[in-house]
Image 1 (tube, rainbow, N blue to C red):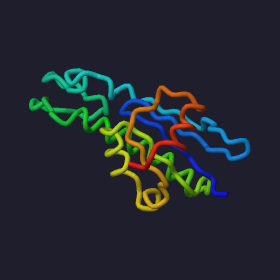
Image 2: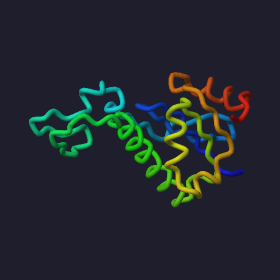
Image 3: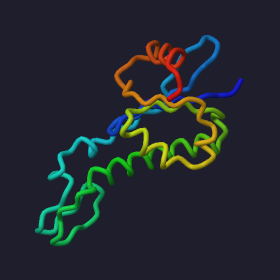
Image 4: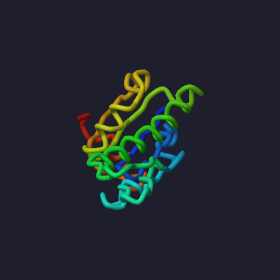
Length: 146
């Protein structure tokens, strides 16, 4: 049987599970938090006195940057992608299930390298980060791919 990893994510939290087959259960491998995704827009942006945004990027007098939150989502998606790439290169899994809130699902799917995109067996666009492992197993079994 293929080793399967399941990622359950939203813009500020991602949990990565290994799907074990005997007995069938999910085991948490890693959890990532990205508190910058919860910051208000004015907290993400630098002021005119030379502060940096949450990524450490200096901003000039044109400090209002309408894409600050989007940049944080992209940075988080890239962090998750790097972890998945490492696990895939080490042959820790051969199949991936992607469960994410619809908004963040797009960022993740866009940032995943082609080899990772090809091994996704199921896409579920819902926020299930608050569900326990038993509930997630049921969702994986019952929910259609969408």
